Length: 362
Ligand code: MG
Image (cartoon, rainbow, N blue to C red):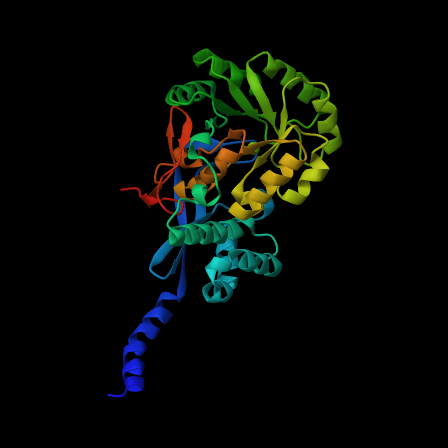
């Protein structure tokens, strides 16, 4: 055998193995997450949420992403799935190590559909950091001991069930209470009948009148509430600014601020912003939002939708960068398929494993 023949023979299996390792595949599934309690906010009431789960495989590494579509922005699981399918060719042929280039191309091709974008982005970042063999927080240069306490959210319910939910949340040092209906005083009274813990309140745009909003917030101040999220409709920026100048606790934006480019406009009316991977389109977009919010002197909270441990763990890896966390979506569901971030005495504990660090639930 000549040297040339030997090289050709020995290189052939290696080359095909290398090619196989460089093939990407995408698997999509709509997963029904069942809620432990009926989940009621000003916007809706539901027993379950359908989210898009995505497995991206390349070079023997399986990475996971999740999209929790937000109905308020005309997204659902089916539209998120169609959106990812429309990008399948692009994603499967791209080099995930060049994720910034790929994300820019996705943003150019796909208007809206931020839950779909988040699912792709989370999976890409999981893949890249698994491939490097480091946890996502380490890749981002963060100290896992800097994670904040997460609130546990109490959805709107009868006073009896509210009291039961507060008892069930005994392990959490701070609670987030959903308000925004005519029953707000009863809800807070039910919570206060059970606990004297600090509370944070989310009105989900529920108060339409600025004087009513001031009245309610002043009363909440007397009830040990630390801050209020989105007291008035997103479009009522001027009214929110008026309210903010008449109350003593900070006002956070949620529905009024979806993307980094919203921050300069809303910074005049709010003290802080609730950043969610599902609103802005994933980890990279959330990092841009955090930096932009800081540039405008705003406090930062990381929030979530009803999500499994995929989405919640992805957000938790960014949490050493923020002041407050409301990352409890996975704790509200009965059938989380994964384990990732955990909570100890309310504090987020990041998995010390490569990538997001997800394991199967069982
Ligand atoms: Mg909110």
